[in-house]
Image (cartoon, rainbow, N blue to C red; front, side, top):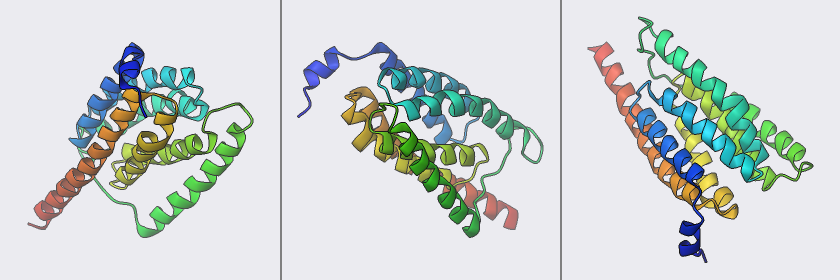
Length: 204
């Protein structure tokens, strides 16, 4: 049982700030808004510190070494890689072969990272490594507006919200990631609608 009174008393202002920044970041992503990347910088920086303090080494490295530089790269791609080079990058999909290749690349990465982290004293090393590997794939696909990135975030948010974070007693983040799970499902549906609207407009 969770002692919610104690959990609320021990809330970390840093974790609360990280949660708020992440919520705004994903809310903007659902709406296909380029300012998602600015809030992403704040989110990943704060969560890098939170995960470091919790000895989630794979997640710490993910935030600092991958997510942070990818915010700048993603911002540039969304802004400049579209037809008019002015924040008009279209939503697209991977081919069936591309989906298989991403799965084939992601799972061995998770296994190798989990094995390596098991020697470092990291907490929940295999699950932490799995969400890290899936997040690496999801972030890259998000950067290029591939709709499949939402499947990655559904999996990551479910693992964080139902398994990883509760076991580290990061209750604010646990609630956050369950909310993010709902937003990921909403985002997938919203991007599907936007993709379909473009297809209809082009056909007309």
